[in-house]
Image (cartoon, rainbow, N blue to C red):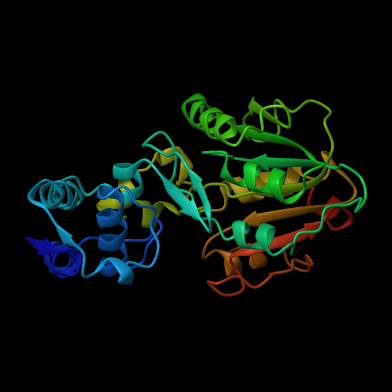
Length: 291
């Protein structure tokens, strides 16, 4: 019989030898292997230390090794193999129809860094480019009186979002909308817009590791400089925001390019676990000049 600890060491060595890439819920071989091992054993991804001395029978060991081998052979992110992604304690179903959730906006929602005006009212929230629906769900959980729209151009993504909304029993509060950015949202107005749009520039798209190429291209690529979607959102966000409303948008590593393109715009850059500069916030009153 082998132990979980022995399989973990074996997995890390194999992952490192295979030169896998990470960034879809984990950042290194150890955490990725721990996640897959626990999933194969029917456990949620937590600290694996208490399991290290556990002895596995032959059936369990085969199941673990088979999942680890699939990670190496297919180069699929672990989230696609397990059909689950985690943001904090929250689990979401995912498959190759959607990008793997990993937005820093999650932290801002969890920490209540994004206030929802009016503070005592229900409020209306839009999650633009919703993908799996994770940010819409987290916003609905954080602001239990709010109504939430979750919009995406991809019908496939909306099917995944529909499943997650149902899992969280939020179908009465979250409306799924097929929309090319704001185009199908008619005259609806929002107190908070959160969006994690595509923001990978063309040169980076050509050199993405294979794990990232498993994700939908339309969820990643945003033109030559990675800012096609960001510029469109900044141009169009004034009208759908209520007075005093807030836009929060993730832009990856594009802060300098964006600030050069919109000089004098009072962007705020709340801190995240990755540092400041990955998510911008902007009040409605600061958007008219961009329209």
